[in-house]
Length: 118
Image (cartoon, rainbow, N blue to C red):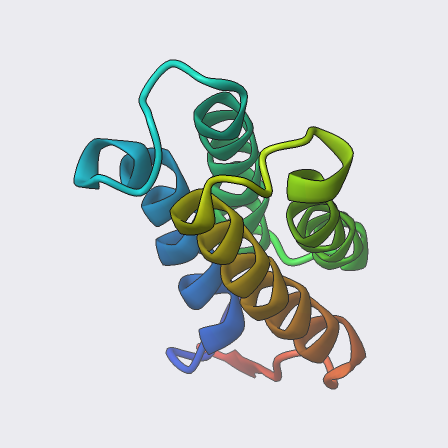
């Protein structure tokens, strides 16, 4: 029986943590908890965390590419949704979007994890 090595992709773990951060950020003073910036943070955080967890459980390329698209959306969202007047949420989503996008692209382009036999 083959199993994945204990060395899983750290990028997926990082994106899982970043997704959780996006959900929690409005409660830590990074924006208001009920405005469009917060809702974007909640929804994208849940989606990023789901796709990162799926990539950890059963790695597929589409999960990485999906998180890359979500990272790009996070970068564009302050401008598209019009909350650039809120510095905290704007910078949080741009920086986290860059990190998620970079992690996802790195994982998508990396060689597949090796499997070992038991």
